[in-house]
Image 1 (cartoon, one colour):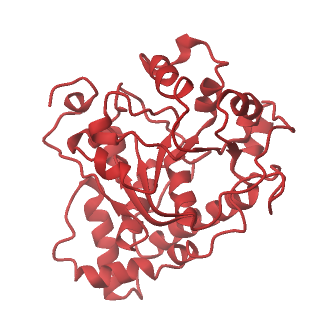
Image 2 (spheres, rainbow, N blue to C red; image 1 turned 60 degrees about the vertical axis):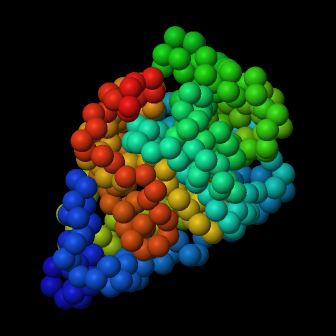
Image 3 (tube, rainbow, N blue to C red; image 1 turned 180 degrees about the horizontal axis):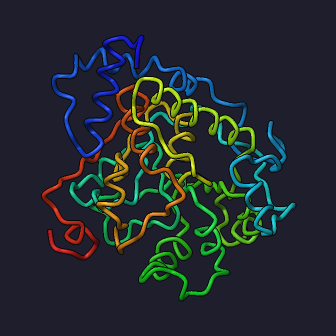
Length: 333
C-alpha cells in the first residue's frame, strides 16, 4: 500500500505474522507499533462511547427498535419479536468498573491457573451459559456480567428442551446459577432482539439479577467502530476480510461493552486469532463447531490490534504443543 509510514507497515506486518502465533520480533520497535495501532481512527473512536449501553425504563435509551445488527434479519426470517418486556430502571454507566476480566470459552484457559487472578478483578464477565464449576482453578468463581446470545437466552429461560443442551451443560447451569443466586449482584445482557421474548421470564427466574437488552444506540456505535477498524486494517495492507457476517459473537459484543464500562480490560481464555478458533474448536467441557456466520478471522485481528493499542490485554497465551483434547475439562494435564 503506497503512502504508509514505516510504523504502519510494521504494524501490518506484526498483525499478519501473529495470525498463527508468530512473532513481531524485528518489525520495528514495539513502541512505534503500539503508537501506530492507537492512532488508527477506528481505535480512537473507542474513546467516544454512545450515551447509553442498554434499554431502560427511565434512562437515556428507552426503545429497543432500531437494532441494526439483529432486528432486520429477525423480521426477514419471520421470527417474532416481543414488543413489551421488563426493563431495568437504570443503565450500566460508563467507567462503572476499574478492572474487568473477560473470561472466554476457549480451552486454552486450562493452560494456566489464573482463577485467583480473575477473581481479583472488580468485575468478571462470562459468556452465554459458561459456569465455573469444575474449572475454578483456571476460570475463578466470580461472575459480575453475563453476555448471552439468543440460543443461550432460550435455554436460560428454561423454555428449551433439556435434550437441546450440551452434555452436562443443563446440570451445571441448574447447580451453579439457578440454585445459587446469593452472591454479589450480576448484570445479564442480551444482544439479539429475538431474545426479547425471554427477558420477562428470565427476570422472574433470576431475581435479583437484572436482564437487559443492548440499546440500538449502542449497537449502531458498535457496528460503526467495528467496521471502521476493519477499514483501518485494510488501509494499511492487512488482507481484506469477508463481510458475509450476520452477527458478532457474544465475546466481541463484550469487548465493546467493556471498552465503555471498564477502565482496564483483561482477556482470559479468549481466542486471539481466527486460526485458533478452528484449531481449538471446543469449549471447556465439549467439542464445538464455530458458527460460520461470525467473522472469526477479523475478530482475531481486532483483539490483537486492541492489545497493541493498549485498549485491552491478552492474558492467556496458547501452547501449540498441547492438544485440544488434553485441555478439555476432566482431561489430564
